[in-house]
Amino acid sequence: MNGDQKFSLFAAFVLTLSVVLTACGGGDGSGEGEGNGESGGASGEKVVNILNWSEYIPDDVIKQFEEETGIKVNYSTVSSNEEMVAKLNVSGSGFDLAVPSTYFVEALINEGRLEKINKDNIPNLKNIGEEFLGWEFDPNDEYSLPFMWGSEIIAYNEDLVDIEIKSYRDLFDPSLENSLVVLDDPRTMLGAMLDMLGYSPNSTNEAEIMEAGEELQKLLPNIKAFNSDDAKSLLTSNEVKAGVVYAAEALLAQQENPKIKMVIPEDHLSLWQDNFVIPKGAPHKENAEKFINFIYEPEVSKEITMDYPYNNPNVEALKLLPDDIREALEISPEDLERGSHATDVGEALQYYDRAWSMVKN
Image (cartoon, rainbow, N blue to C red; front, side, top):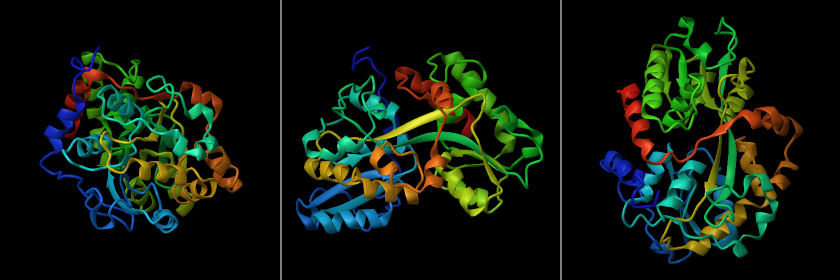
C-alpha cells in the first residue's frame, strides 16, 4: 500500500482534536523550560522544543540539560499518541523532538513525517541494548531511537478485592462494579478484547474490531475511570479496587501501598516501546540530537528510571539501579515471547476509532 492509498491517521486526528489544540499547544509541561514551542524565541537557536508524555522525564533532568548545554527546553506534554500526532500535524508547530510509541513511529515514517537522525551526534547510543533497535519498519534506526519500554498489566488492592484476578476476563466480575481504572487507550483496551476473543490484537478485520468494542462495552459497568496519566493516585487512594495500568504506575502505587499487587494477565500481555523521533522540518535538529545523547548518559538514564520506573533499554543505566528496582522491572523471557506490540493497522484505524467511540460515548 503506498502513501497515497494509506488512510491518513494524521488528518483524522486533527479533525477530532483541532478544536482544542493550538500550534504547539502547551499541554501540562513538566519542565522548567515549558514554552509555546516557537522556534528560537528569546533564546535564539539555543532552544529545543520537546513533546512528550507526562511524568516521563523529571524536572531535575531537564534543568541539568539546560545547565550543561545552555539550551533552553520548551517542554509540552500529551496523554495519548493520538494527541501527540495531532499536535505534530499542526502547521508551524515547531517541535524538535517527540516520543511516540512504535506503531505510531511506523505510521509517521510511512507518511514521510520524520527527519533522519544523525547518529554521529549520539555517541551514547552505544549504551542501548541491541534488542530494542532495528524494528522492521526502521531496520537501520534512521528515524527512531528507543526511550523507554514496558508492559500494561493488571493491578489490584488485595484488601478490597475478594476474587482471584489472573486475567482480563476476571475484571468482568460483578464484584468489581464501578471500581476499575483502565488505560484511556483504544489500541490497548480493544487489543486486549481482541486477544481475549481469540483474534489478533492487531486485527484489521472490521467485524472483529467491532466485536471487540461490543465486548469492552460489557466491562463499562465496572469501569470507574479511563485514565492513562495518574492511575497510581486512584489505586493508592482506594478510589478504585483494580485496573489496567502501566507497570511503572503499578510499581509506584505498590511502593506507597504494599497491598497493591501486580498481575501479568494470562490472556493478553501488551508490550510497548516509546521512541525518540525528530519531526520533519524541526528547526533545532542538532539540539534534539544533543538531548537524546544526554538522556542516554547512564547516570541520567538511571535517574529517570528511579523517578519513573519504566523498563529501560539503556543497559549501562540498568547496572546502576538498585537491585530491588531492577528485579521489579524484570519480565520473564516466556512473557516477553507471548507479549504483543501494537502495529500500524493502516486504514483499519477507522474501525478502532469507531469501536472506541462506541465505548466512550
